[in-house]
Image (tube, rainbow, N blue to C red):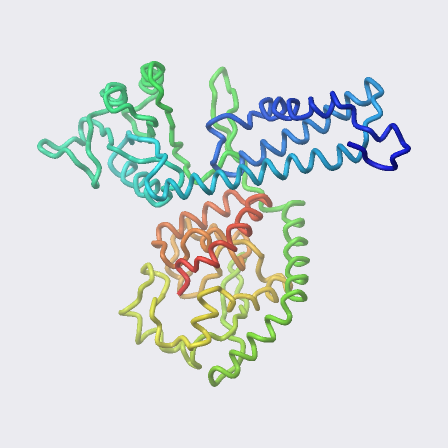
Amino acid sequence: MRFGPAEMESSTVPFVFAVLMPLVWVLAMTVARAYEERFLWVGAEEFRRVTAAAVLMLATVGTVSWAFKLDMARGFVVVALPLATALTLLSRYAQRQALHRARRHGGKMQTTILVGHRGGVAALDEQLDREAFHGYRVIGCCLPGSQLEPGKDAFNGMPVLGDLSQVADIVKAYEVDTVAVLPCPELDGPTLRRLGWDLEDTDAELLLAPAITELVGSRVRIRPVCGLPLLHMERPELRGIRRLTKEAFDRTSATLGLIFLAPVLVTVALAVKLGSRGPVFFRQERVGRDGMTFSMLKFRTMVVGADRMVDELADDSDGNGVLFKKKVDPRVTRVGRVLRRYSIDELPQLINVVKGDMSLVGPRPPLQREVEQYGYDMHRRFLVKPGLTGLWQVSGRSDLSWDESVRIDVRYVENWSLAFDFMILWKTAGAVLRGSGAY
């Protein structure tokens, strides 16, 4: 392969080097632990490790070229490494999607048993069932002896396979792939240690759920203290340079979005105006960061005066007890149904983002009457700006229960990062096209 003018011999890539590059790439991926099973097909960590392998390989190639004075064609490095990285990420993403589709149909699952108290076991079972694409199929649970009920061999639809002392025997008898243990007084340090030893003779993974389940790995580190491995929980990064970076990215992207989508916005505005009597835009007071109210913009999708009809329809709500929603809402216009189905009515909120009232990604902007029903945990959402999209929107929207909505909003605030925002923006496109929970 040649890069540059043909008369420049230095532009030729040595054949041996070209052959070795794929082997070096595999070695770099191995060093970056990108092939480890626990990182495959789960979360952004897999993609981060592939990117780390690319950076490692780039540094290695540069160092070797400098140390041995190899006249390496720069074009080869510029083309080969980014292409290898992009194709690997694309391949991993395609394989992940294929695996998730198979799991949604019940294939390629890992048999799992849950160990702990009834409340925690039931909550985790519901979570695993809701996100079946992660591949955990719960076949039963183990409860403390004090919570076993004579004559009853099932709980919350799950078979009760035994008590806490029988976990290892149950794993061997049912060839269990994963044991998920929740915090409970009966499973103290020595007991968990012995359980880990007992499972060493099996192929089962042992997963321990921390007491603080809404924190992701980026904020939790194992820190040795007095010879003990303790979990160190870092503070959420809600101030400083990262927040300024988010502000700059939000406003710049929203401005470019308004310019790029100007023809769409004008067309939708005409459709709304011609479709029914009333203004093009609907303004509504919402609560933003630090509890401050602002006027949120949307394309009008309902008849004029729809907000005054809520009390008449409240008894027939399809919402979650706090949010008022109706799957078949008589107030929605014909044009409005299309706009709401694909979330096009939300596009004017780009103006709110440019003004600084909202962010591209964040919790859903609530109404004042909703805030009055909030508990202590839900007030954490006011530490950040509400978002045009967010974890709530890509996780089911109006189909979520109130407890799930609270958990998701708190999770976003506790774990905010630019990478997390990019992941949510990427998933928003799929959520909009599917239209699940959009009513």
